[in-house]
Amino acid sequence: MYNLISFTGIFILMAFAWILSTNRRIINWRVIFWGTTLQLMLALFIFVVPAGSQIFLMVNDGVIKVLESSTAGIRFLFGRLALPPGTSNEAGEESIGFILAIQALPTIIFFASLMGLLYFIGVMPWLIRVFSKAFTRLMRISGAESLSVSSNIFVGIEANLTVLPYLNNMTRSELCTILAAGMSTTASSVLALYVFILKPTFPTIAGHLVSASILSAIGAIVMSKLIMPETEKPETLGIDVKPHYEKESTIIEAIINGANEGVKMVIGIMALLLAFLGLVALIDFFFKGIGLNINKLLDIHVDWSLESLMGYVFYPFTLLIGVPLSDAFEISKIIGERVILTEVKSYQDLATLLSSDILKEPRSAILAAYALNGFAHVASLAIFVGGTAALVPKRTKDLSIVGLRALLAATLASLMTAAVAGVFFNKGSIFLLGR
Image 1 (cartoon, helix red, strand yellow):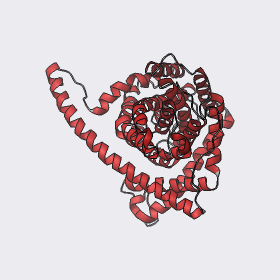
Image 2 (cartoon, rainbow, N blue to C red):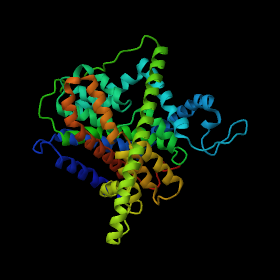
Image 3 (tube, rainbow, N blue to C red):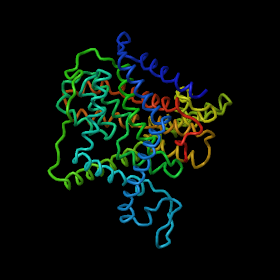
Image 4 (cartoon, one colour):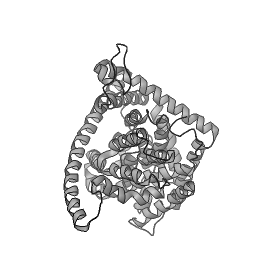
C-alpha cells in the first residue's frame, strides 16, 4: 500500500509544483516524461536489479573505506577527542562522546581535497559530461544548465563556475534550474559528514546518499521547469557544452586548493549552525511563550515549538511520499526543521531517532534519508543566490527574483526523490538499516 502511495505522491508533488507555476499554460512534457522515467529507471536498477544492488553496495563500501581513511589525520590532530562514541585507542583511552566540530566536520576538508585530485586527473570532468549529455539530449534543456546540474551532483556552489561563460546570458528559467539543483543535491565533501553522523545506526547510508543526489538532480530539473517554465530561448538549447574551469599546474596544487576550499566550507557550516541554532532558539522562546498563553486560554495541549509547527506544515507531504502513519509526525518534524536549521541538524535528529528505536518502520528512515538530501533551506538560499550573484553581478536582480522559487523547487525535488525510493522499497531489501 505504501509503495502505491509513494508512486501516486510523485505526480501529486508535480501537480503542486504546477499550481505554483509562473505560467501554468506552458508545460514541458518532455522534461516531465524523461525526468520521471529516468528517476524510476535508476531507482528500479538500484533497488530491484541484482547488478544494480551490487553496484550500490560497492559504492557504499567504497565511500565508507574512504571515510575511514579520512579519520587518520583527525586522530593525529585531536587524539582522544577524535574517537567515535563507544570506541577506544591503543592506549586504552575511551571516547568522550560525539563532537561534531572535531569528529565529523574535518572529513569535509579531506573529501574536498580528494575532489580536487579527481578533477585534476580528469575523472570528475568526464563523469559530469556523461550526465550533462544525457540531460541535454533526453530532456531537451540547455547544455549550460545541464552541465551545472550535473556538476552539482558532485560539488556544491562551485558548480556554477563550470558554466561561468554562460551565466550572464541565461534565462530566468535556467537560473532557477541551476539554483534548484544546487539546493537539492549534496556535495561529495559534505556527504562525508552525513555518513559519519548516520553510519553507526544506518550502515548503508553512503550508498543511499549517492543515489539520492543523482535522483534529486533530475528532480530539480522537473520541479524547476514546472515552477518556472521556459518562456525564452536559451543560447545553448540542446547543445553540449564543455566544463569551464582553471586546471591547477600540478597535482600537489590541486590537493592544496581542494583542502583550502574544504576549510572555507567547514568554517561556513560552523558559522551557519552557530547563528541559526541560536536564532531559532530565540524564536522558539517567543513562540512557546505565546503558545503557553493560548493553551491556557483555550484549555488545549499543543506544542508551539518551531520544530513542531514546521512538522505540521510538512505532515501532509510526509504522508504523500509514503512514510507510514505511525512514524509520519516524527519524520515530518525533521523534514520541516531542515528548512530552517539546515540538513546537518536534521540528519543528527534522524540518527537520534534510530539510536533510540523511536521509529517503528525501517521504511521511515530510508525515505527520511532521501527527503533530507540536499541544501534546501533558508541559509543555502542566501549562499547560492549570493554566491552566483558574485560571479555575475549584472544578474543579481534576476537571481533574487527566482531564488525563492528555486528553494521551493529544491524542496519538492527532495520530496520527489524520497517518493521514488518509496516506490521500490520492500521489507526484504538489503538496503535497510543493516544487511
